[in-house]
Structure formats: C-alpha cells, structure tokens
Amino acid sequence: MNNPERLPSETHKPITGYLWGGLAVLTCPCHLPILAVVLAGTTAGAFIGEHWGIAALTLTGLFVLSVTRLLRAFKGRS
Image 1 (tube, rainbow, N blue to C red):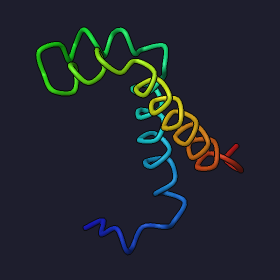
Image 2: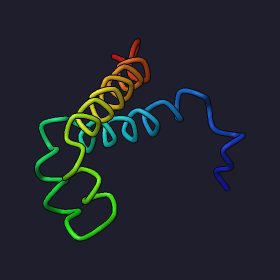
Image 3: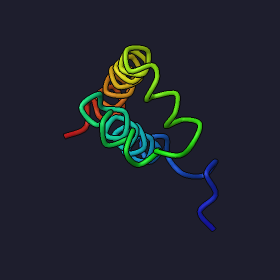
C-alpha cells in the first residue's frame, strides 16, 4: 500500500537520518573499550585488542562521516 516509490522524498530523510545516528552512536570512539569487551573471543575483538590505534582511527573516521550524514539528513527540517 505504501510503496517506497509513492512516498515523498522527505519521508526517507528521517529514516536514513536515524540510521546514520545509530551508526554514529555505535562507532563513537569513546565506546571502543565497550566494543572490545562485547567482541571478546571473536576475530573482531582480537583485532581491536591487538591494534587499538588502527581501530580508534577507523572508528573516528566512520563516526565523523556518520555524524556529517546525520546532520545533512536533518538539515532544513524544523
């Protein structure tokens, strides 16, 4: 009934904005120790444990990208 092609383009912005916001929360560099504990025993956890600097730089870059996209998605909405 509500096909995506029939919805106005402004309806997609909040959905993508919330998704970018969720990604920003997950990739915030201050959450790196929490991610290391949650992912302990996995390959990703082993990588984070061995390469803190690379993980922090990668998460910081992804965090900045997602916050930028979040702000762009909600720009102009009042």
